[in-house]
Length: 200
Image: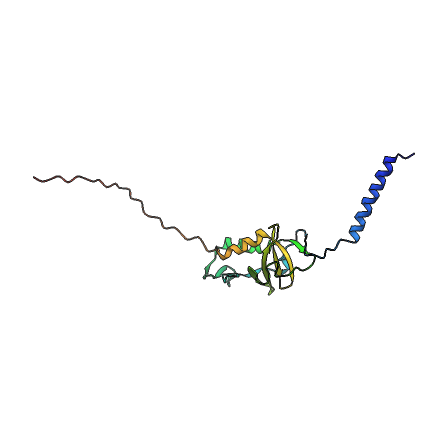
């Protein structure tokens, strides 16, 4: 004869298995703009190709722009023109490809409530392939884990904070080569002061 405790365990197991299949086949669909984890998806994919230019502007009118010249080297055209530090510019290019989608919204939020009526930053990307993307950056989420972003004027998603911050810092710290410091020659000799001898 089966013990009563065994029957209870079997019933609990059946409920757990039933709940699993019910949720799998009929997922809960929230009607609010609650972020849901999206896995390790990236905003920019390999299908976009090689980055040709990066343009960042903010709501205060500041601009940063860098692009490849005919030799495929990075040059900066705003806020002033000059050759870029290729290592730092390459790091910025890598960061573009590393923008991680940390959440998708179950329903589109009001752009005004997430800071996308007047975005804090606008990032324009063009690629050698001819493709282009626009990333409008709004407010931080309540948990400060990411920014509300409108991608190509359409979907509103949440992008990891650190990735956006790394790019917007280019507005205040463009990747120019470091300025060489002028060294002053050191004096090897020592001056000797002699007291004046009074003349009688």
